[in-house]
Length: 152
Image 1 (cartoon, rainbow, N blue to C red):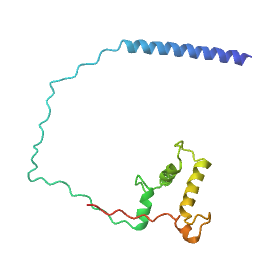
Image 2: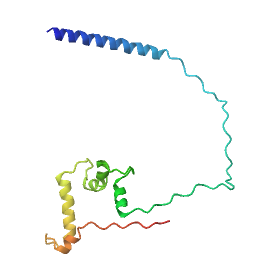
Image 3: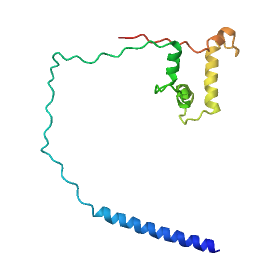
């Protein structure tokens, strides 16, 4: 019983102390002095001439030759810190997930998955017999990605 009474008294004391502190800060803020006016007669530095003359800019960066494994690694390492985090590893799958998530609620329910699967199956079943032959099944394989040619 004594602990309950003591706890209640301490809680009331802390609440009262907090109230006085809060009110004291509010009065100080109301009496704050106005900000000093900015100096408007500041002299701006002279602008450089727009004619470059004999000036030469820095050399453009050169592309370094990366090995196949390094290119594969950097596809996942987005911030180039030489470490692949879980988020970086899973980020390559977000576009495929968004295509399946038709209602956009970031949850893939069975109906959304089933519609995508049935659509893929029906697209591959060329003769419409509800069976995939090896040739029909081969059409469901992911298409190989071609590198875009440089349009320099």
